Length: 293
Image (cartoon, rainbow, N blue to C red; front, side, top):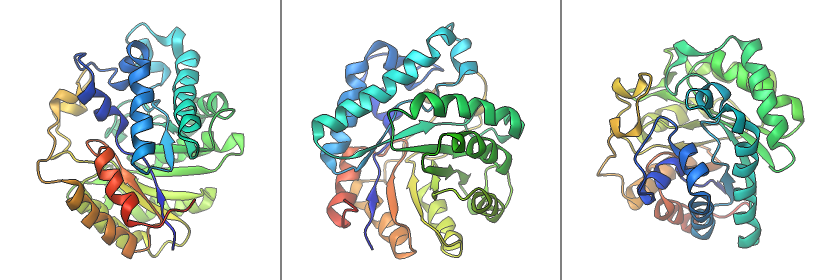
């Protein structure tokens, strides 16, 4: 079985390389202020062996930008995110670009999810902007069935492959962060015929638990875990920044590869990294697994 290698955690990699203070706009602020840094991180992930660059657009929702007086930049900054990823791909000479879309409201807050029809309009607008540039759409860190369904319904309108990223409870990989069974989200994904389902932005241990459930689903699936000790309650509050989160000290590239080996043994055919997983982690994955290119 050939494995597709995703990139790693763009947002935290940018925060590590930038001298700017963390804000509630997270990596979107870097997009605006240091676009060359965004392109450089894409390039480093490609050079490490990633086959897919995910656009730096996770947080680029109108409501998030509006809180910082930047909603008028909505389309332009999405286009810029796509262009930077495409430029890095072209200069590398190979690869694909995934249009990244994060949850509305706040990450890890399924209670703030929009109703499905309303969310579908939000994601359809973004999909239409990104579609001329990207090869697929990657919906990331969806924490409830409703949150995921709204994103899938909206992203599906442009006819590109849709990959759905679900985030699970860090202490129990069989349930979403909403507490709903992972299997409920998999049923929904099958109904919409998404092209791949992934578990993302959860601890590697929880992801491993999820893979046992995913293996019964059929279809293509994969995983890209984060390197946080936990998602703190403080981070879930309005105005919080990534300074509220702490990186693990035990998740070396070699250790991350051990987890990924287990995911692939369980049938995963897409692996990569989320927050705090950098280019050297991805290099380990690329050196281990046979490329799908």
